[in-house]
Amino acid sequence: MYQTLEKFLKGKTNIDQETLTKICSFFKLIKTKRNELLLNYDQVSNHYYFINKGCIRLFTTSKEGVENSRYFAFEGNFATALPSFIDQQPAEEYLQTIEKSELLCISRKDFYYLVDTEPLFAKIYTEILELGFIMAQKRIYGFQGFDALDKVKWIIKYQPQLLLKVSNKMVASYLGMSPSTLSRIKSKL
Image (cartoon, rainbow, N blue to C red; front, side, top):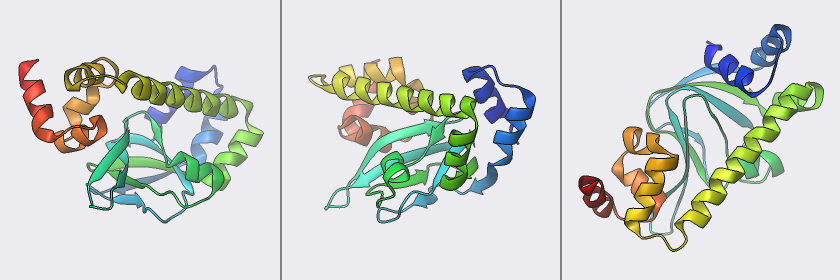
């Protein structure tokens, strides 16, 4: 149950088995259905998820009901509505599994307990934040001035799992284009 999380933690720092076991003990296994909402727009995020199997996406909806995907997390990664998790304000976005998923869930209280009491976990959390920031910046700056073809090439380079595991509709919303445009570009590559 904890093998993927243990592998992730070991890959980030030199961690002893006792500390590893302690950290893992705070995570509870949950299994979800496809398209299960983990967090609604008006809720406060009180959980952090590690994906053992499956995929989570963060998205918003426009006034017209159009979904705009903001982030995808795959197996071996963490996900939450981070601003809400940190400041305890309503998320103003949705957190959803896009396929049947197996998640390890930790409460906000337990998460910050580990950050405060386990220096290695605090180090890992900092790295998670930094990597997330870097990927967000690459996406924002990379997409400025990109045409549709360049955006798809960027995805192939930095997030190839998106094209393999996520529907065209969701990927298109992430890239800011129509599903038909995405399909047309993919057929040319």
